[in-house]
Length: 157
Image (cartoon, rainbow, N blue to C red; front, side, top):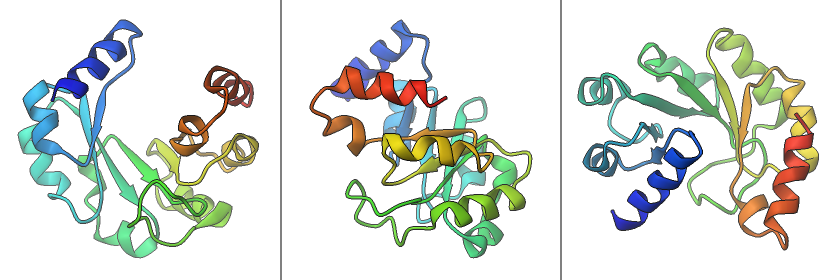
């Protein structure tokens, strides 16, 4: 909770929404701007009842998960993993650029964020699939020079 509040304060300082990953109770406790959940978490319809005015994101990796998902309750979808990732053990197999294109066809109006194994050199190709954004962990957290890496990533947009 203490770390989440520190991060939330940093986000507020820079006018960035603070979205908690996979912890609905924590998001509620600190009044986060939203929560991002996976397929095995509480249903997004139930989360929407708990958080009617908050941002809700849902991870979807393929057509089968899409068909099982109640996307009408979410504000955006995290699509992936695009590439193999070390950040999440349960992420599953990589879907690649073709998986991103398929998800765009299935969700033409939904904001989509590519997730999983994304490096700086991938960003331009991801954006060309009509994906709205990227979520990056390892490429930043393991960078030798974080500021330089983030600047290089921003230049891709």
